[in-house]
Amino acid sequence: MSHLLQPFLDYVFMQRALLGTVAIALSATPVGCFLTLRRMSLMGDAMSHAILPGVAVGFLVSGLSLGAMTVGGIVAGLAVAVLTGAVTRATGQREDASLAAFYLISLALGVLLVSLRGSNVDLMHILFGSVLALNDAALRLLCVIATLTLVTLAVVWRPLVLECVDPTFLRSVSRWSGPVHLIFLGLVVLNLVAGFQALGTLLSVGMMILPALCARFWCRNLGPMVALAMGVAIAASLAGLVASYEWSLPSGPAITLSLGAIYLFSLICGPKDGILARFRPRPHFHS
Amino acid sequence: MISFKDLTLAYDRQPAVHHLTGQIARGALLALVGPNGAGKTTLMRAIAGDFPAAEGELKVNTKRIAWLPQQADVDRQFPIDVRAFVAMGLWARIGAFCDLGRKGRDRVDEALAAVGLSGFGARPISALSGGQMQRVLFARLMLQDAELCLLDEPFAAVDARTTEDLMALLHQWRAEGRTVIAVLHDMDLVRRHFPEALLIAREKIAQGPTAEVLSEANLTRARLALASDDRAALSPRAAA
Image 1 (cartoon, rainbow over the protein chains, first blue to last red):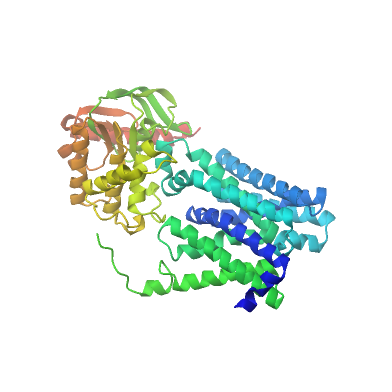
Image 2: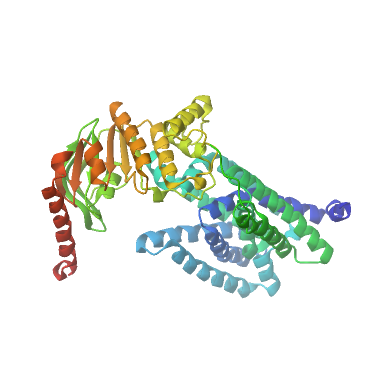
């Protein structure tokens, strides 16, 4: 066991990678829990593609500059979220249809923009990230986004829960409904941009969605579900980084595949809706 | 309590209710009845402040409104227990940030006891039957401590015993001076429990004592009015 943890003691780049992924785990997984519970998992995936043209414009202007690509990603993500909402309201089309159209346009535009100036290596860096190359500035950004996300969630927790479970009731008792939806979309974009620094635009959504889906198989209440999702994301980050170091695997996919392994285990063994649980007689509730 | 004058409510210029005039007194226990598509839910949404008037005037003389929508609006798979769900009824007191406190928790337990669900607080809402969920919604409504209670098909898919238990609560709320308006389809239930009724079919057909409103002539008139509206909307001239 100590042999597996040795790289984190010996190498600063491994320590940075672990700190970065822990920050993303603490920040992105609660957002992912709400995304899955609102049946918006695929929306998160689409939004992760939607930030690409903004990141690409940042890359065109300043090369692999963290600040420019981050700002570009946030602007592009928010623009697609607002445009999708506006088109849905103006035309009566379903939100998922508008989102699919915008994310496909964004993905193609982003790849085109990066290829105008960069090499295939740059494109791979943006699409799949480089968690082993996180510098001080990137770590600071991840920690700031994690803090901002957790504080914001603490503030909007109750209205956000109510917006998920009974939006009509929330509209009838307060004016939180519109603002809380926008704040939530902002958090999704912010965390996808944070995730892309480490895992790239294509895989950043994995850290958001997969831990939430795993935790759903084990928990009946939201608080424990969020806590477990955080734990799953941290454990998968650790396992993915160790696997990446030991067998020279690309670290982003190794972390995502670790999450995938925990998901498959939960899918089979999870006591709530897991495959085995469906064949086991369950004790009934007592009033 | 509520007055409407020449009130028209429309979806995309298609009136759901038109030229409605009347009033509902404070302390009324009123059934809002009419055929499917008569505009009952739309009128309830407008009274709750969730649907704007296209024309005319709607005045509601209170802001303390509790609204029980059709059950389909609640995400029953959301991981939340009964106690936390019912506690949302205290929103006016605790808002987004305040703690429930000992008193709040006691009130939640009392509300659950009043609807016959003592000991159900720790259950997830996904584990409740349709009738139990409806009792939970009534418990949340009780905690809102509202002057005006709006209930949209509160007894749909609920067994007779649950319906009678929940009706007793409605009578209790009325005795406490609250105004209760319920959208209902079961005319026998309306005749047995509701002293007043408002019958609509996109327009007002009748309002007053239930026995007079639910006469065979009025019910036939409501069906014909709705059919005639639908024929007019589908005619080539209307389409043009």
